[in-house]
Length: 330
Image 1: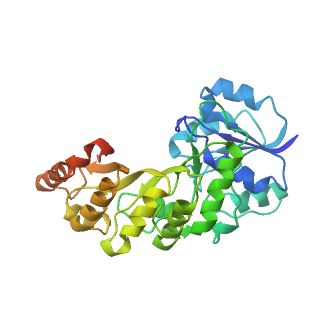
Image 2: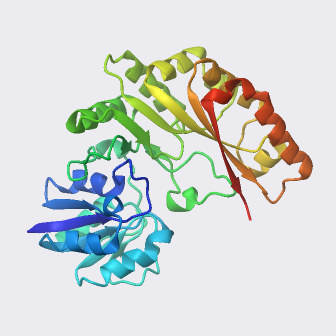
């Protein structure tokens, strides 16, 4: 009999295990008996239900990663009386008896203890959290793990809701995060990590410490994550070299527009000279980049859009290392 069975839902990347339940299992299992069923890997709702029904459990915890999974979560949950919901897709008016809004570790532990639990509480010190436990989720399709080095964001871009989910930005210290990465990779045998952070370099102090620590270690972990261009003086040539030698294979960069005026309205806080500095240094080191772009931002003019096209032409020498991911704002 499990104290809780944690279930993820479909419509996420299939080459990675769902991270939320793995982090919760790593946190809860010293005190509780926990099983994870990765519904994202299963896919079909009927097969998910058949899999869940193979186990005996006191509570079914359904991880709702996105509001787009809400209907499916409630449909699955309607088959059971002992359900608690959580995740970024759960809101304060969730139509169920038991649900957690906000960060789940301490709240879910209190819930399982039978104590009153708090919604919206942020965890101040992420260094105290254990590593995720992916042992229930490994299969031949999994070739990459997901880890979280920070929660929240140092930016508050006009089009983004991260600040409403995590008002305060917190991080794991660089050396601690490097230790955690190697511990998870050794546990699973998978040496590729995708960071879920809004920005891997949100805290330059801890990001600098992380890449320096990883660069010094002989065993390399291939890593990728979301990255922001900053002011040029925030990132030295040594930082770029350590980033390359850390095992970094790619960075997703929220450029959004080639127009400074559009980016200023968004709250991006870097100019074209800063952008050139970062793209050039990453490109010359052969680090792959994905450019996130938004077309149709409310303040964007035809002239602004042309600046985005000109920007792409400006970086054409790195085209073999650049993927462009455009999004239309409607």
